[in-house]
Length: 217
Image (tube, rainbow, N blue to C red; front, side, top):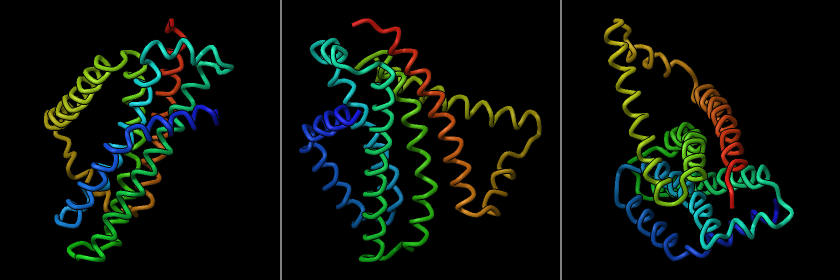
């Protein structure tokens, strides 16, 4: 698995110029804008996209046929992708957090402590993004995978709207339920979110293993 991780980090470095542009633009926006939470969420999302891109590189020019001629199993490959996604996404999340806190301390406009709390709450987003994107990318590949991901996000939005409408029909005040959350500590909410994210990630991992076992190269 160490070799696969090294390979994927080298694949990300192929895109270093795009990465430098993203980092530069985001740094400028964070110091110039009052909305510094955006940098944390956006960099987390970018980290998952860069992790996702390594699957496309592996599939290019029938690369998987060569890759699986090496002494690695398909389960090992999927496990490494999820681990790599967590490492890269966490690194980008950390960079976005440090960037936002640094901008807040240098320019003002936001309290660093509040930004840190928000960052902790945003972190579980990483689990959801990886859990959603990886199975679609492994199943459908490059272009079709991106279309499937967009469709899945749209479906999630529709489900959210449907839940809201159902709550109105059943006379359940969902907003009142969420207003009780601030009574819980940030650590408690984050721990619950991370726990739920890990469960979803495990389910996603098992789905991805099944997808890879059925693929032919």
